[in-house]
Length: 396
Image (cartoon, rainbow, N blue to C red; front, side, top):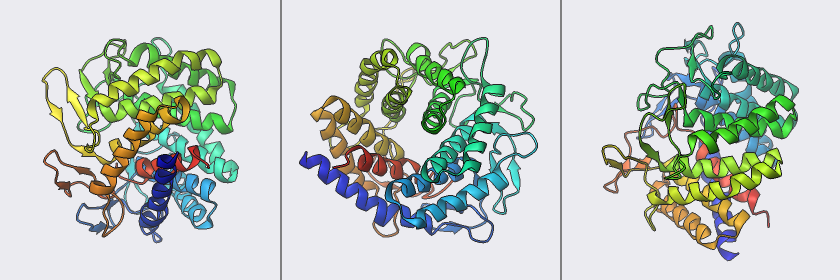
């Protein structure tokens, strides 16, 4: 009990004194939204493009912060993000969310990456959850309908990755340059599961319920490797796994997101099926964890190459994933891992001078200042959510 109380106290302080104040300063009061980039050397680029994922994750973060902490400054920041997303990132002609806009809010990449639509739903539904804003819920439902209309594979199940502005399938479906060009991925399905869970909290629609249940089953029957208990990352349209890569951060993140979805769904049969498997997924993820050293990034089991970099988001998800095992299954060893990973974060990833967290710690132990402090993929979603998950879960 003392360990979790101390963890809660420390992460709450980190959220209030370090993470949220850093991002409040990044509001673009001239053009709207939040600035698109701060380099690893803490240089602001006020004319950087603004990516949908970053802006929508910021909406989620400040919406959740207001819901939990009830400070109006967080609601103001969330509303600032909301207006930019609806007014500039939402495609008023074809629906969906643009991949990116310039610093003025003018479209620069109009493709419809389903991953980005998922995060828009996540942020919009959380804003509604925080302040019961009907406009936010309306847009979240619109995007849910877009995903189901254009992305859902009626014949073979699952969701296709990416579309043109007019919803034509794209030849290059990759989420990022490091990803494989396959039409179905674990990562996109995980980040459809996550917003569908949050949307279901506030909108008890039967079709949404059906699709949320289906997503859970897809993870258990298609995405989870029954032998290794790791999640497979890339698939063709027939659900054949195409590349043997283990992502330890996604394993531990999925362990608690799948469990959260099952709990929210409220189906006892699904929950009974999920429970032993999410424990196995978390155990498999622990292959990448070592005491005092956090969790490594990934392993290519074909080549044998291991990427030992410690990314900020992997450590944050490890804290939540292990805390989830402690909360629901009284796993004291998991709590020790969560606390140990937090100690690693405090010692290595926190930027004590400027605020926020560094992108990663390299395999040689040096801080990675090449990658952004704030950018297309770097925002207060993983670390801010980690703090808020601990505060909410252990409300004593």
